[in-house]
Image (cartoon, rainbow, N blue to C red; front, side):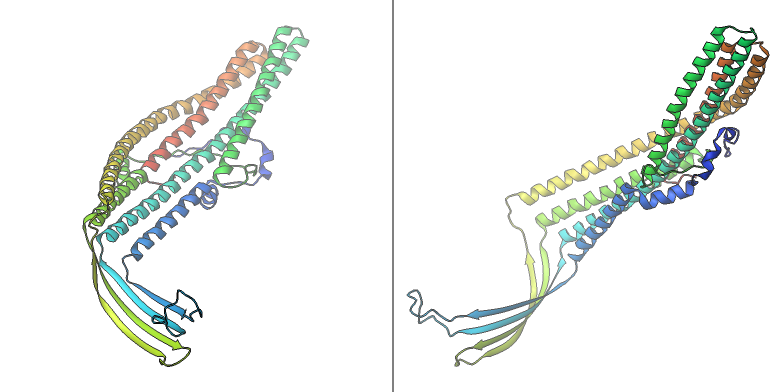
Length: 431
């Protein structure tokens, strides 16, 4: 369906809003992308997951260390009965340095842990992307809800103006004896009710604005005005949307990444339980020793040691086997969660498509009813002025026109919401 605007309703808007800064939809999306606190938290979680992946990768790389020790031996305490003259040494100072390098080049547990953390980092990235897409959809609908509430407020203001005109006509008819006091009392009651509804609608518009400001991460009382239309665009064919949803929908993609992470973690637990860790190591030592009272003379030497080392965990009380069993169970849980996500996605796409198709019919009815209601109201006002219909008949036409306008704007918002939801499920940004 082609885009349409609400320009027919806009003459009811108040000109005083022109001095309020205009917030366009594009600006709202940009502000939300920069300032929404929930999205910023997801991006921080993504950074943390990337760092955890780097930590896991670092365990697969060789490590080099420098160990430097400065120590002092002696002197013995004179007369100490616990001292052993035969075992006593001359007081001296010793400084040792050692460069050590090690690389666990065969460590299946660490390798699979890195794979698991990589998959979890991918899941965090997918989650952040999905949250951004969902945030854009939420901001889009919140923005157009402000448009809706703004138009509803303008329509209610017109309702008040019409009630004032009806009351004034009733007064004039009463003055010349054409109508009774009851007609004037009914007109005043209608005006009072419309004024109270106007206050309620003003509160609804204020709440809608505050909600949008909160999504944008700014002060809730920030004043702004919005654009004057709720466009409704065709989201595309059902088969295409379903294919995109199965391939790209963030919730399902995140579940797939978590399945991969759980499978790798299960393999890591299995490797830790049964597989050895083979490492290559090398150490280069420097030793300097200085005696206080030579002889013996001071000593300085250095040496190089290298080799291979294999480590098996032969017995740990069954704890590692239990961890392996737990990891396998967690992997099955994530597989079930992925399958459930796929089923929910199919249901969500089907339901959203049903809502979209029904909203198209409602849009067609709303377009026809809006023009018919305006014509009926204008004719009723003219007949009431001429005294050919009663105030009750005019009131009924007035309420019918307002209901048609309210239904029209709400139908447009509902149709846009259905289209936006379909695009979100297909991982597409709202148009």
